[in-house]
Amino acid sequence: MLFTAAAITVAIVGVAGVRALMRDDASSPAAHEAGWDAVAVVARTGGDITLVSPQGTIVGEYEKLGRAAQVEVAGSHLALIGSTSVTLLDLAAETDTEPTVVPIERGATVTRLATNSAHLLLAAGRPAGGEVTLIDGITGWSANLGELGGLRAPRLFVDTIRTDPTGDTIAIADAASFQTIVVDRPDNPDDPDAQPVVTNYAAQPLAIGRGVVVTSQVVGQRANIAVYTAPEATSLPVPSDIPVGGVVADGALVAVTTDGTVIRIRRGDRTPRQLTQLELPVGSTVLEVHPMLDATRLLVRADGYSAVIDTDGTVLYQSAHGLVDDAPTPTFGQRCIVAGQGTRRATLVDALDGIELAEIDDVDLLGASADGCTLVIADGDALTTLPGELDREVAAGDVLAVAPDAAAVVVRNDLDRTYLEPLDGDDEPVELTVLADNPATEFVFVER
Image (tube, rainbow, N blue to C red; front, side, top):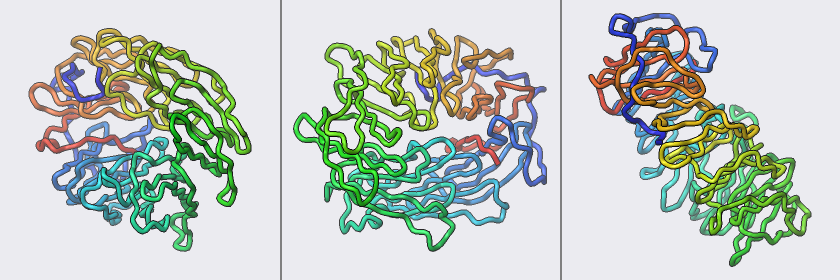
């Protein structure tokens, strides 16, 4: 069960029912109530973009925006990520609006940070460490974090970044000076006089929230955790078992340690308060902890174990199975997870209350909605969604993209023809083959 392109069976209503592409000079179609109203067909080799509505109308075209290795999207905002720059485009702006181009260091890897889905925050840095460039794909704001922190020779790593759900506050560790740089971005990035507030702390960043910074320093088999509530405040370190990850909730740290203990620490505490003890398998340790649902839930993963807890330490769901293979890293905006049960069985779980929404048995899991609560699966010779089912004729193909509400997919069938295929509503399939003649074509769902 993989969240990757795979051979599936896809609903196609016959050639006569497939709508052809049509030209339309209208500036913008009506917005789709589910949060997307067009598919952006991106030719990554040259940066040409064609927008196609669910009805098959070409509603926008952009040319020669530059070669892109990857594409990220949030609503109407696209980020085309190249080897030396990131090009930002707002599809809701006037068509003659110039895109914003942010230079990045050659050899840098660009990572989308795990904010909620309304934000598009990117970090560009070398795998071996160095300067890291932060880019807001919506406002166009960008900054070099080491430069902001006053570091002469920064050795920053993107995977040490911690952020709040909106990406307004960011923390990153510097391996050269063994300190944490915290950046509070300006509320109005369009104001040329607005400057970020930068504060340096000792140790490594663990969790961050508005007005709260939590750092951790490992000493042998223990850690010293410090909770800061203002830049000028001091904080005595609290000895603890080593935390794997956590979140700031109500001004306090809620974290999970390697042995599965859920703890809470407030500024001024001398010892951690134990909230609960997770029932890990014998010999297992916690490997990952990810905030979900705007920092109100934590997803915990260990060998042969997964759990969802709230910020009071209540265990809402736990399973003697891990997550499915290649499941995407949870974000602040994600609500549902898929816990695996062997190689061909899994359960769709709502992290809000721990309710099991669906059992998945002997199917291929091909993708999910943006919140993770609707799955696109291949069940034998049929494509369907869970929860829900489809009533359509079928033809084999590969899933290339899934809509944020999982109400449509882009598929390429066995005849090497590409379609926008609705999985919900009355729209008919739209053939996109003429726009997808290059293998380096990417499809993303957008809202103009």
